Length: 127
Image (cartoon, rainbow, N blue to C red):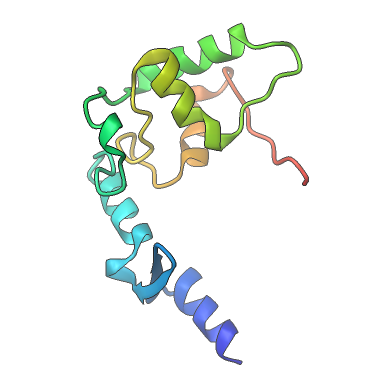
């Protein structure tokens, strides 16, 4: 009976959260920091790797152009996973793709934004 209560405290009430593999008060969690960074439209420097810190942060124009370019240059059956998008932006465009700098706490929300309508769509793949 403890597990459902903990799940409600994490998912619905935002009383608890996760930091790395630990359960912590929500305001100490990664999700809280991600939400704050998104609210302030700032990259999440707290978790950012040092190698990325010198890269400029992608703007909405950069994201639109980058996604268009990635999709145009891909092989016909090639798809991109969310895990790979940040790496592709870093390697191909020398830009840090930061969902929080764009006002979102999750990358899937960025790629579902109306500003990318007509450029890309997201689909869940069964595993």
